[in-house]
Image 1 (cartoon, one colour):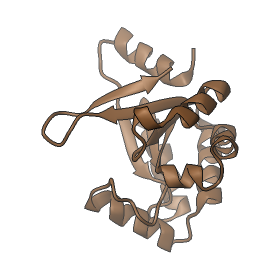
Image 2 (cartoon, one colour; image 1 turned 30 degrees about the vertical axis):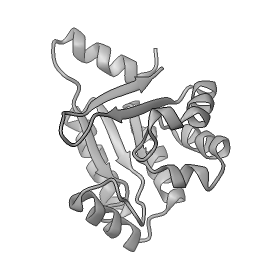
Image 3 (cartoon, helix red, strand yellow; image 1 turned 30 degrees about the horizontal axis):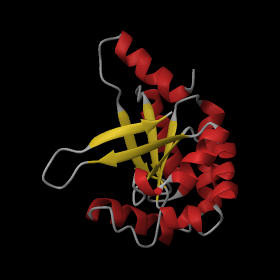
Length: 166
Protein backbone atom coordinates (compact mmCIF):
# COMPACT_ATOMS: atom_id res chain seq x y z
CA UNK A 1 0.00 0.00 0.00
CA UNK A 2 1.42 3.41 -0.94
CA UNK A 3 2.04 6.08 1.72
CA UNK A 4 -0.91 8.32 0.76
CA UNK A 5 -3.42 5.46 0.79
CA UNK A 6 -1.94 4.20 4.04
CA UNK A 7 -2.26 7.65 5.70
CA UNK A 8 -5.95 7.84 4.79
CA UNK A 9 -6.55 4.25 5.91
CA UNK A 10 -4.91 4.89 9.30
CA UNK A 11 -6.92 8.07 9.80
CA UNK A 12 -10.11 6.25 8.83
CA UNK A 13 -9.36 3.41 11.24
CA UNK A 14 -8.99 6.04 13.97
CA UNK A 15 -12.26 7.67 12.94
CA UNK A 16 -10.61 10.98 12.11
CA UNK A 17 -9.92 13.00 8.99
CA UNK A 18 -6.43 13.19 7.53
CA UNK A 19 -4.56 16.34 8.53
CA UNK A 20 -2.81 17.66 5.42
CA UNK A 21 -0.42 20.54 5.94
CA UNK A 22 0.78 22.96 3.28
CA UNK A 23 4.07 24.84 3.19
CA UNK A 24 5.72 26.65 0.32
CA UNK A 25 9.12 24.97 0.03
CA UNK A 26 11.88 27.38 0.99
CA UNK A 27 9.72 30.02 2.67
CA UNK A 28 11.38 32.05 4.09
CA UNK A 29 14.57 30.04 3.44
CA UNK A 30 15.67 26.43 3.06
CA UNK A 31 16.71 25.78 6.66
CA UNK A 32 13.65 27.41 8.23
CA UNK A 33 11.46 25.50 5.80
CA UNK A 34 13.07 22.21 6.82
CA UNK A 35 12.61 23.01 10.53
CA UNK A 36 8.93 23.86 9.91
CA UNK A 37 8.46 20.54 8.10
CA UNK A 38 10.17 18.67 10.94
CA UNK A 39 7.91 20.40 13.48
CA UNK A 40 4.76 19.48 11.53
CA UNK A 41 5.92 15.86 11.36
CA UNK A 42 6.60 15.82 15.11
CA UNK A 43 3.13 17.28 15.74
CA UNK A 44 1.52 14.43 13.81
CA UNK A 45 0.59 15.78 10.38
CA UNK A 46 -0.71 12.91 8.22
CA UNK A 47 0.27 14.19 4.75
CA UNK A 48 2.65 17.00 3.87
CA UNK A 49 1.96 19.14 0.83
CA UNK A 50 4.94 21.18 -0.36
CA UNK A 51 4.54 24.01 -2.84
CA UNK A 52 7.14 24.38 -5.56
CA UNK A 53 7.85 28.12 -5.58
CA UNK A 54 6.85 29.59 -8.93
CA UNK A 55 7.35 33.10 -10.29
CA UNK A 56 3.84 33.37 -11.70
CA UNK A 57 1.47 31.49 -9.35
CA UNK A 58 -1.83 32.53 -10.97
CA UNK A 59 -3.97 29.89 -9.26
CA UNK A 60 -2.83 30.97 -5.79
CA UNK A 61 -4.09 33.64 -3.47
CA UNK A 62 -2.02 36.43 -2.00
CA UNK A 63 -0.70 34.41 0.93
CA UNK A 64 0.75 31.67 -1.30
CA UNK A 65 1.99 34.20 -3.86
CA UNK A 66 3.94 36.06 -1.16
CA UNK A 67 5.34 32.81 0.22
CA UNK A 68 6.57 31.83 -3.25
CA UNK A 69 8.10 35.28 -3.72
CA UNK A 70 9.97 35.06 -0.39
CA UNK A 71 11.15 31.57 -1.24
CA UNK A 72 12.46 32.57 -4.66
CA UNK A 73 14.11 35.70 -3.23
CA UNK A 74 15.96 33.52 -0.71
CA UNK A 75 17.46 31.54 -3.60
CA UNK A 76 15.11 28.57 -3.63
CA UNK A 77 14.99 26.63 -6.87
CA UNK A 78 13.95 23.19 -8.08
CA UNK A 79 17.23 21.56 -7.01
CA UNK A 80 16.86 22.94 -3.49
CA UNK A 81 13.21 21.84 -3.29
CA UNK A 82 14.29 18.30 -4.14
CA UNK A 83 17.06 18.63 -1.52
CA UNK A 84 14.43 19.66 1.05
CA UNK A 85 12.29 16.66 0.13
CA UNK A 86 15.26 14.31 0.46
CA UNK A 87 16.04 15.77 3.89
CA UNK A 88 12.43 15.18 4.96
CA UNK A 89 12.55 11.67 3.55
CA UNK A 90 15.71 11.01 5.60
CA UNK A 91 13.78 11.61 8.84
CA UNK A 92 10.26 10.49 7.92
CA UNK A 93 8.10 8.29 5.73
CA UNK A 94 5.32 10.90 5.75
CA UNK A 95 3.45 11.07 2.44
CA UNK A 96 4.63 14.10 0.46
CA UNK A 97 2.54 15.78 -2.22
CA UNK A 98 4.19 18.29 -4.54
CA UNK A 99 2.00 21.31 -5.30
CA UNK A 100 3.12 22.71 -8.65
CA UNK A 101 2.24 24.16 -12.06
CA UNK A 102 2.20 22.39 -15.41
CA UNK A 103 4.70 24.74 -17.04
CA UNK A 104 7.36 23.53 -14.60
CA UNK A 105 6.65 19.94 -15.68
CA UNK A 106 6.17 20.54 -19.41
CA UNK A 107 9.23 22.77 -19.85
CA UNK A 108 11.57 19.99 -18.69
CA UNK A 109 9.80 17.11 -20.38
CA UNK A 110 6.97 15.32 -18.61
CA UNK A 111 8.64 11.98 -18.05
CA UNK A 112 12.13 13.23 -17.05
CA UNK A 113 10.64 15.77 -14.66
CA UNK A 114 8.24 13.34 -13.03
CA UNK A 115 11.02 10.77 -12.60
CA UNK A 116 13.07 13.46 -10.78
CA UNK A 117 10.05 14.21 -8.57
CA UNK A 118 9.55 10.54 -7.73
CA UNK A 119 13.27 9.96 -7.14
CA UNK A 120 13.34 12.89 -4.69
CA UNK A 121 10.76 11.08 -2.54
CA UNK A 122 7.43 12.59 -3.60
CA UNK A 123 4.32 10.41 -3.40
CA UNK A 124 1.74 12.58 -5.16
CA UNK A 125 1.45 15.46 -7.56
CA UNK A 126 -1.10 18.28 -7.43
CA UNK A 127 -0.71 20.32 -10.61
CA UNK A 128 -2.90 23.35 -10.02
CA UNK A 129 -3.40 24.46 -13.61
CA UNK A 130 -3.84 21.01 -15.17
CA UNK A 131 -7.42 19.74 -15.38
CA UNK A 132 -7.84 15.96 -15.53
CA UNK A 133 -9.28 16.05 -19.04
CA UNK A 134 -6.02 17.62 -20.31
CA UNK A 135 -3.63 15.52 -18.22
CA UNK A 136 -3.33 12.28 -20.18
CA UNK A 137 0.44 12.63 -20.65
CA UNK A 138 1.03 13.29 -16.95
CA UNK A 139 -1.39 10.57 -15.85
CA UNK A 140 0.27 8.02 -18.11
CA UNK A 141 3.77 8.70 -16.77
CA UNK A 142 2.58 8.89 -13.17
CA UNK A 143 0.90 5.51 -13.44
CA UNK A 144 4.08 4.07 -14.91
CA UNK A 145 6.28 5.36 -12.07
CA UNK A 146 3.64 4.98 -9.31
CA UNK A 147 3.21 8.67 -8.54
CA UNK A 148 -0.32 9.70 -7.54
CA UNK A 149 -2.18 12.52 -9.30
CA UNK A 150 -4.48 14.77 -7.33
CA UNK A 151 -7.00 16.93 -9.16
CA UNK A 152 -9.40 19.57 -7.91
CA UNK A 153 -12.84 19.93 -9.40
CA UNK A 154 -15.65 22.33 -8.72
CA UNK A 155 -16.21 26.01 -9.38
CA UNK A 156 -15.92 29.25 -7.49
CA UNK A 157 -19.64 28.97 -6.72
CA UNK A 158 -19.51 25.48 -5.28
CA UNK A 159 -17.27 23.60 -2.89
CA UNK A 160 -14.20 22.03 -4.45
CA UNK A 161 -13.66 18.34 -4.28
CA UNK A 162 -10.50 16.34 -4.62
CA UNK A 163 -9.88 13.31 -6.80
CA UNK A 164 -6.79 11.15 -6.50
CA UNK A 165 -5.85 9.12 -9.56
CA UNK A 166 -4.67 5.64 -8.58
